Image (cartoon, rainbow, N blue to C red; front, side, top):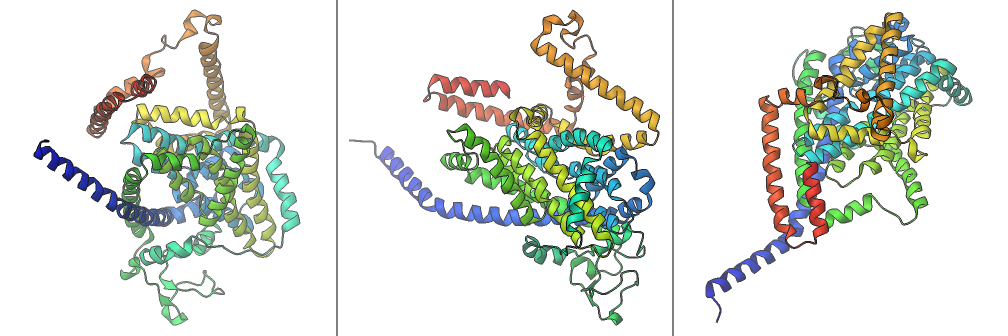
Length: 558
């Protein structure tokens, strides 16, 4: 006869399990609906973030571009302006559209716009990198997410290094884009809105801006205009140089949050919107990742991983599948009309392990092609004699990305961005503060320093020459250390002869780890790793020795 208490407990557990199983589909459905709602809010927050930066810095960027054509003749200066401009406006589509409008208005020449557009390609990945920081609490997730975010950076930098030299020497992009523009000049175009039809009902309740004013500022017109839209809708034939807008002209006040207050300045609205959009973006993304973690686990996670990262028996099919992913990335980016929205949505999925970095690479390459449609449409919307030049500038954007893909994708050996981004991912997983330093250095300090140096040609060439020679020397020595160390002088077989701060991040980590915010993050991760270790030890009792060995290896990697 059994113990009645045990029978009661067993019966209770069984009923609890049955209840959990029966309610599980409903809970899962609700969680998935919540994920979709959060994804919608996340995409809207990206749109608001872009608007916030345009309100804060749109006029300054337009004035600088409009008055600095002599400076922009310097290719390096143009490249850095492209990076900084896109970082400021948080949208390569917006920035390239402004540049193309300037070309169409004869403020810039197509050959000057080439290098600015190259820089815009680099600057667009800053949003993606910021989004990856939201997964910094988990080292494994952060490594994958940061690798995915920076694969975009590494591809763009690799493409710029090669194509900048070729363009300065042979003007390849300028000549090819001119040939295509000659054939297509005169084609009419208009702005295509797809995702905006879904997001604008919400974002337009918060803020509305007049994007045409950005183009006018860049062309030196309408200097008294405000970007914040007050009256809606403006008639198409209205001339924006004839301001201010008044109700007497038949306008009605726009119905959005910032119009509830009188005479709100652009920078005030931009600052408020920046804080609000960043808070919403981070909150929505963190909640979305947590929900996806709870829903997409176990067997379901394995199935999704196999669907998103198919492994075919044929190597040829696996190779060709990458081109399918490029097409998918291009189509999806065309649909959402923003490479940032697409790549920022993919990054958390890579962090969760649902999409591999190697799968993400061709998707992001496709996104680079898809985003060029915005600039082409902006060029087609120009009028008069400026259409040809505007089209030429927009095709530069397209050819830059096509040539970059041709260089760094078809031959597997040439896919340098993948090992580079994975090395960055490993570094940030070990030293998580490095991600913030990377953002500040790559998208702020380096462009500013290079811009300053490029103002003095001799100084620029001397400094950059020393930097390039130094990098080549370090690369050769590192290769020799790993492959043929005995052929090197004893001193160069390792970097220990240098001060530790020159060959390791450990000295900086010891200092930064003492900061309270970093120390709390480290303590949290150590606590979680101990819990995971305890779970692994319990599970290892029922697993074969090989799997246990792999788990221990993973823990040692941590």
